[in-house]
Image 1: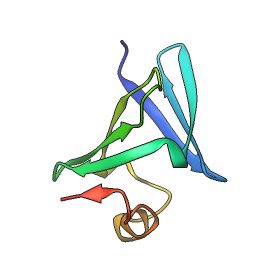
Image 2: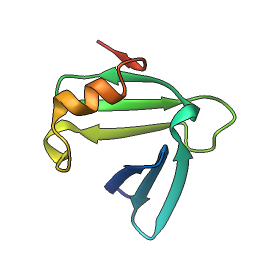
Image 3: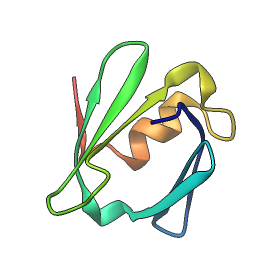
Length: 78
């Protein structure tokens, strides 16, 4: 699998682009988000084909980390 190079979140839909491929996931499909310090590790509920995603914190550009953590506070595990 190619490295993920773009993740956007809009209207409760997460768009993940990697290489020539892309996928859309609903925010409600998130099982949990693990805070790794330098990145967030998204874990999706089964039966999603794309069960996980790694998002580096320094690549979050549109909103700051505080806003990101507020939006996903129910999912983030520290």
